[in-house]
View (cartoon, rainbow, N blue to C red):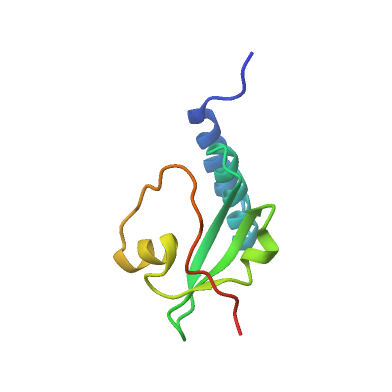
Length: 105
């Protein structure tokens, strides 16, 4: 027998989110489930720093979570910066070198 279907996994995620009362726990659960659902090495939620306009990693699932939380992206920088600047989704097939990342000062 195989694991749960994608629909079952999405339904389980929705139920878990609906049952959470703590926003931080809800976000972490959603990131972890999204990572598993997509069979990804990692997943993250980036937010905009209103003071600088930069994107920062708020929640990260995967092996490089703590390192990722030190990275900030300028608007339009990297894949996430482009998605945020253009307010449109972007499909990036496969993997490639990451560019445009910098550590905060």
